[in-house]
Length: 255
Image 1 (cartoon, helix red, strand yellow):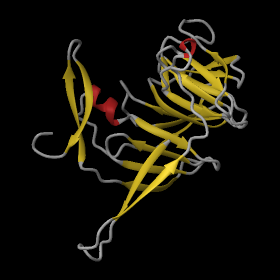
Image 2 (cartoon, rainbow, N blue to C red):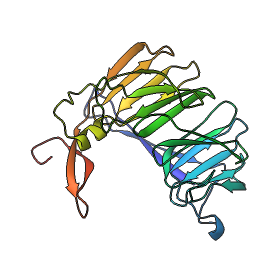
Image 3 (tube, helix red, strand yellow):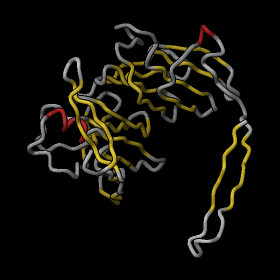
Image 4 (cartoon, one colour):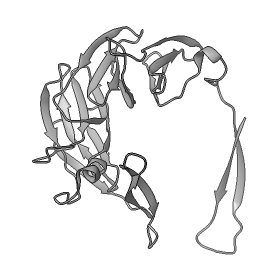
């Protein structure tokens, strides 16, 4: 049983007491990776098929566990390795298309495709430097956030590819001057989260400049929303290998 307490307050009079209400939520079912020692998982992503089946992406064991719409275990697929249907690095981001084909990122360079029964279909190998996030509209229209590591000339954060990996279009921009940034900082700036709606409109948000962009299926900008936040990004070199880590801290002299 989960309890949520809602607090309501009036902006008209400061002396009015807040109203507190308790709402009890009863779960329909629970998928517990600790319930069966043979099916331990570390959930990194989740997909829902058109028939209600639930696919949990586990980047630690590099596999996908399938459950029915009532939470009953069905099967699993994927494993560490370098062969077809295997992963050397299973990324968190994933998607599913209208045919219930499942798309998973491997090594941040390839997209591995499986059918809804876990059978391996193919590898999509776009000619890009780095995949951060992606979204599938249909089986032949895939939108990728291609993080730039080397070539920043005429950079666009969204690239549309087809099922063969060929680039169809590219659009979007980063609303921050990156000319004099070091490469490691450009990586954080160009990392964007992407999604696509039923009409094929594309949405993306840069992770560190708090803007949301919407484009129509032809790549034309529909609107931009600029958010505000009390936090800002800071990059720090971390031991032992000198890698830079992105932190978000509250704005002020200590950030």
